[in-house]
Length: 185
Image (cartoon, rainbow, N blue to C red; front, side):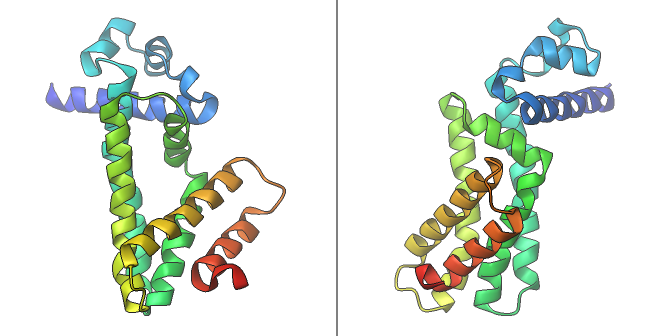
């Protein structure tokens, strides 16, 4: 029974990711989740009390996976600059991932305080990953530099998500150049 519930919960989360990435937050409804999973609408409420609860669980499940991917990319780098480049490139490579599109859609909507806090904490975890590399480069305030670096990544994510005129590879290269050399290019 527990295995069945676990599989149903996973199916609901997968359906939520699909709905969010296809149609944004408006598409994430309990009737739509029920239809996608073949469950009765009332059964969806047995797993999640609200849309916000679905969002919170998506954040709990997906953010650690992304963070692990970013961290693994950074670990493969052999210098502080290489770690910074990996940090930027891996986050931007995840933009096309359905899980990322779902959370971007979520972030654009009105969320309850719990869901917002989960997203903030997850982003804080990403920022914390790069502080040491920035310290190795001699930044006097590596935490501040890390937050500003994440701002570059976030701006590049938005640019890619908008379907900007520039190719995503060019946006990624520009973000890496700005992260490593500032506006001098």
